[in-house]
Length: 107
Image (tube, rainbow, N blue to C red; front, side):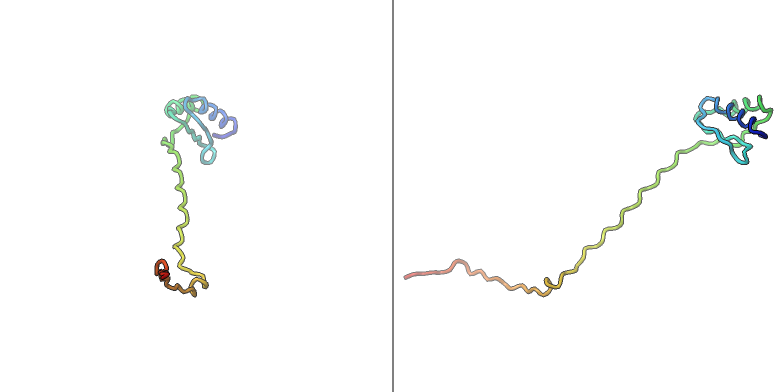
C-alpha cells in the first residue's frame, strides 16, 4: 500500500466485512491486521483484490483471551514467639495447700 488514500480504502473494505471487530496496519504499514469473529478471510481477500488487484493472506489464527494472572500468595505467617517478658521469668510459683474447712471444735 503506497499512499494514505489506498490504506484508507483498504481499511474501509475490511471494516465493512461481517464479523470484523478491529482493523489496524501491520508490519511496515503494508499489511492489514484484521481481528474479528467469523470473518471470511477468502471473501475479504477477494474484495481487496477487486480494488487493488493484489492481496495475500499471510496467516489466519484464533485469538485466545489472555489468561488471568494468578493472585500473589499472602506472606507466610510467622511462627509463634516463645519470648517471655523478664518479670514473668523471675516469678516463682508456690504450691497452695488446701486443708479444707477449719476444724473448730468448741468443747
